[in-house]
Length: 447
Image (cartoon, rainbow, N blue to C red; front, side):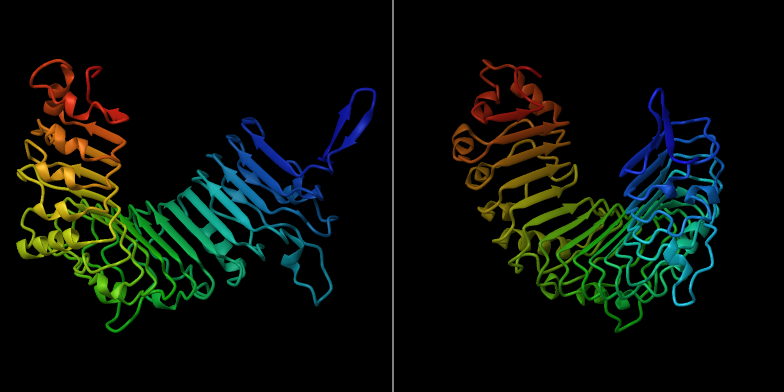
């Protein structure tokens, strides 16, 4: 408890030079040492203390310590299934001009709490916290307490995962609109609403929302804009999400990365990419009720990566054809991943004009052969074919030889093509068409 160890024959050795402590898997430990006494400690991890039920005041070093954890920059609490309480420090009276909370964690910038499901209390003294991650706890009270104690001007990154009681972010983020730069929300099954003032998050650059099945829409009022600095917006596996405000998304002029995946009730993403001059990556996939798609793909000069497909079978035909035409006209695309349907017996002919394409992934198409014009994709260096169960034939050997830059061929779940490539010397073998490619996976004589 004095942060000293006894060395036989040499007396007591102070541990006051320690900078990094990893205190792990001491399953019978019931009380945490007085780490707050270590004047140089920068990094502290408490992990796998299964028997620990509380982190008491002694953790901070006792009242005689004027500044507790004076150098600590990063603190991690993880995998403590019985931890229920994390107590406040017992702070000594100080001069009136000095705030009490500045005596505790005066330099702590990074706090992570993971897999402490029973934790229901936490301290309220984090004056300069920049990054907060909370993952797998039942109560949202620690989140409330920590955010209420931190300075809104300091917190830049907030990650919230698997907080089972969390229903709304509205009360938690009050005051953080001006400086928060990155917000990630994941697997919060009861979360119903996001802040309705997203437009006021002036510094927000990254917004990620994953696996929030109770979230039905993003709150939005007509004429309201999105976060003005947002560059990355990712939404995935929100099974009840049925509405995305296109007007709000189009207002984010610096948006570079937009990804919407596995949102099974989403019907429309009718944004015009012409309103997003900086967009370079777009992914819209596995939204099986989606009937309306973005427009303006072909007119966009900065779009380099596109993943698209897995829509409703009743998708608007004209909308889909427009997208295919737009893709075929693109001069900037370098990476394309397309999810088709099993009844698609041919590749969209529009793709033969994608001479700048470097990487192509085709998933779930029903064609038996790749077209001869495939050999005109002169910049192609990587080709992946996945779940094309009817595919038997590659283009002709002459067409494949024209793909001078093709270095990688990956074939997955294409059983007929694999069979056709297995017999190296068979007159019907497809192997001779592709054997010159340097890196091949999934097909060939060895498979």
